[in-house]
Image (cartoon, rainbow, N blue to C red):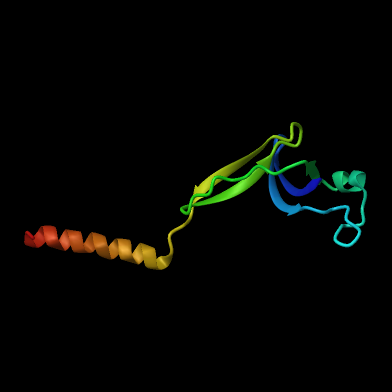
Length: 102
């Protein structure tokens, strides 16, 4: 059984902030009962939904605590300062080429 640490966003949307694959293991477990962990806000699932990997996106796992439905929300990776500067230089080069008629 997999344990999820969550943060409530709405009554039916909790962000999964952490995962523990052996919460009841003698060596690696938390030393607490399932009921205690559920009372602390943890949610238990049999398996995790796998994300769709895209090199241009960040993904966050969410779960509905009532139905245990899981889903990912994706967002673009923010550009680095170097990428932003390169984009600006490319734009300036194009503008200069248009001005001089190249």
